Image 1 (cartoon, rainbow, N blue to C red):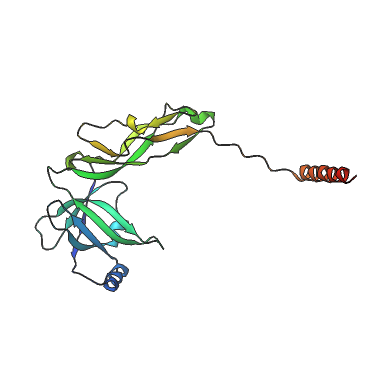
Image 2: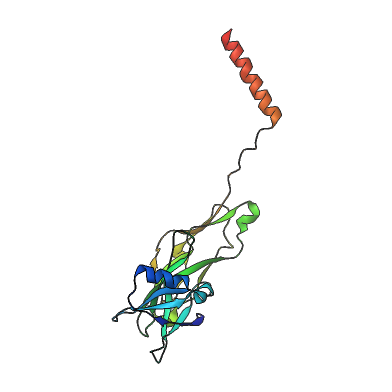
Length: 210
């Protein structure tokens, strides 16, 4: 089961960019919750709640002052600024019983590959997947065991085992991880080697002149 947190949803009306900026500076982040067949709802969430959010996927109960029951949803997207990595906007998706949702799920690797003892290193290419499922089947994460991988071995996304109630949307093909051997960098030349090379080049130039 996914962890559930309860956040206060503060209603907001249409505002100018300047007004939204002022609210961000006060720790109030503009947000929208969307739901199939309903109009989206605009509001503010507290920056402090976002900063304390759990790692990975989790459920959010948005508590509105004018609603008897909280809106059960998940955090769909966080928009950050290009400078300073500040949170600008947040998108939520309401979870409705009986309606499937599309959601990105983290993909974690487990086990220590046998190839590590031979000088290999793990190169992970896919660290999350997009799935479609009912809210009650939402997983916190997926895991793939890579302990059997040797040097130059790889594991494919098609090897990810999913329950029948979950549909993999993206990616449906590709390498999740491989065990690679780092290329050895040439050792830097010593001062003596550099001097010998310079002497050889000088002798070659003298011979050519003769």
